[in-house]
Length: 360
Image 1 (cartoon, rainbow, N blue to C red):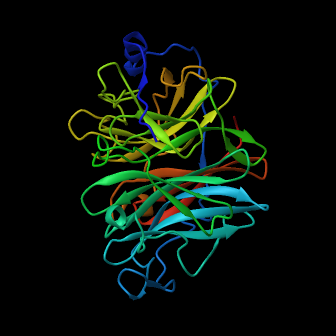
Image 2 (image 1 turned 180 degrees about the horizontal axis):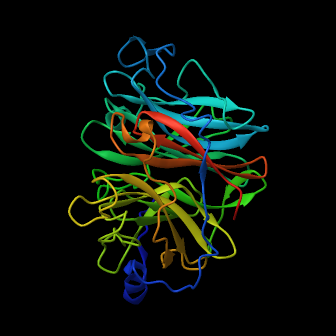
């Protein structure tokens, strides 16, 4: 496929990158509060009973024994279906599937549904694995999953699709071409709208859009949800649409959450962030991961309109403050289920928890 470069004007770029500028008044666009389901949390954790024969190690392994975290989620056939990241004792990540009829109690499939294999993605996925899924649906029902391939040195944003969440087609690196082949890239959140309980990708001005990145936020666009192009300025550089803020909970890095939700106010992006040890929020631990919100224009998705000054979630519970990584709340799963929102997040990079929201 011919490599297309998306060009934006310098004036638009400057408006986009002014992360402190607020061009809308009030906070009606925000999710007001997510309430942890404390009587259920954590809802999933490491599980030594799950095993399968790894096609690359050629032996049976306990693929979820070390850590279970950072899940995506969708509603399918009246159940919450969670695609969770799991690590074995060597640190390789694979993606498993769990289902729940109430949003809290999940049953897991014995084997992972997505993992490094003897295929054309092996060089990118091995030995680090397949990490951090995020999922939306195409209008025809096809599930589109972004994930991170990690070879042990470089993280690369990738794409896969499925009709049933069990069998997947890998579509390779999301940012194609030699220019970005070895560029560190993660965390793709596609712009979508809620249609009942489905999160369906939605075109804006004839294209699908995605926010991605794990220090600053960048963008990509697509005509078919499979083939994507990075948004660049007139100099051929990646456009930064949001950056960390000094003195705030998101002072070290920003990273997209589950998806970007298009509504009447604009595009609401729930995002993950880390606190800087030197110039961050002094009420939070250094490097603590918290959850924030941002609003982008629904007609010019590169334009940042507003941003929350307060986090939705920050590490409070023991399993969030202590794990394979300390002080982490990291949201990747979000569903509309039983007439309200459920979010699923990783705590301490070791376990999974749920919170609910009845507003917005």
